Image (tube, rainbow, N blue to C red; front, side, top):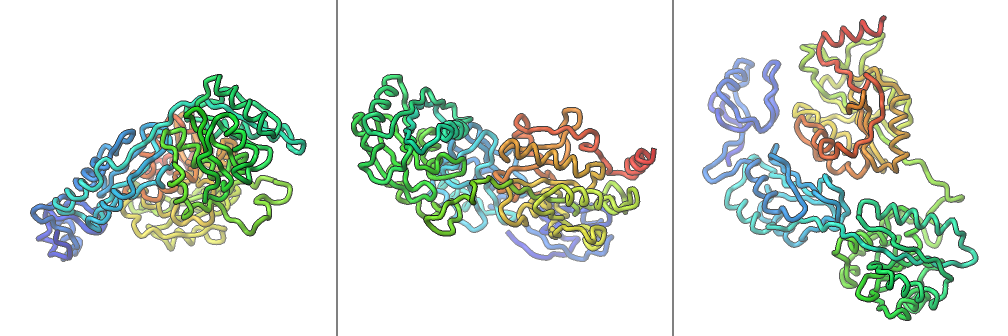
Length: 537
């Protein structure tokens, strides 16, 4: 492939390297230049353009990305219908655990710097529709020879291990200091972990904290047909000869490993009873926060349970939360739950092309710029921060929001479309918010009450659901995204925004009715004038 500036009249058939404006027309990066494009550029005074020209034996970026993704595709996965800007994403078709062949992925990424594959953390839990990997060709083309070598390296390297329904026997021990309400909460937290896996607790037995009683409970559960045994001790296991491992041996089982290099979750024990897995949970497993118990349980439910040797390799990355010092408690005094923080991303980079020469975001409504109405609603709604993504007429947008408690982030790629602005906003977030609401700058009818209702609904669903404003049962804007989607969103490109992700999860989106304000369209001078007239009456 050849790359560099060429005379504008000699660039027909080449791929444009950078988004370029020609009058009111924007030619996007990667666009294949036509004779009429070049005439338009020349008329605007362009004498040269930076382009990529494919050489014989080259594949364009989309062809190469398609081949890489198809080669990596294993059971339980699907790809985008078509490549875009040299990228093809892979998605889970079923709930389970994502499994990647690390050596194969590394080998593929070492074939050619222009050919890349990035994935979720190996053995991540996924739901149907979750993006798990992305094949991205960095340059505008790649040699067919390099692509073939990469295909060979990555063949069938990615898959989803689907969850396999298990009949779970639960044993919880009692001591005088342990309230029954704690055992009840433990059961609820466990059932929340099992949601979506197809596995259920067949029977729970609560016993005294004595090896003989626990062994008898295990024997009963085995006779009932349980094929996975979970043990929660009233007192943590501190030795391989403690109460719970001793009970497992008394019941005829085997202890495989005690202790894992994951914190929280160090004091986890695994074993087998009648050929079925046994997990003695650490105390932190009573909390819904991620810990080593999740890593072992999820993989066990998917039929890819880790062995003792593999678990010893979990140290790097095994520190799952900040620990100021030991042995101080993890929670603040009173064990009061903190309210999850939610951020806002306000998109203000667009060119308002359908508005002609006017920037609709700066058009006055009721005496103030349209964008200021949205920003004021956001700053009044209790977000931990409001990030405003700028691009077109950046200085004027900043001036329109002067004095508001917002943070500006410039998107240098705004000409490529809304997707780049959403991604820029996600990448710019500070801290560790549980979710982020994506707000459009041209929806002045929404107020802080509407936004607060979305936030409240999001928190009521554990900050795990996509929550969107609706109008008459139809999805509108804004949309509040859980943190689990930040990685997917941060890689958006082009003008599609996050629509592809929303379409793949359409049945799971929670709508909060906001009336006509959620689907207000002010893209043309006529629609803007009609809206102004409506609010005057």
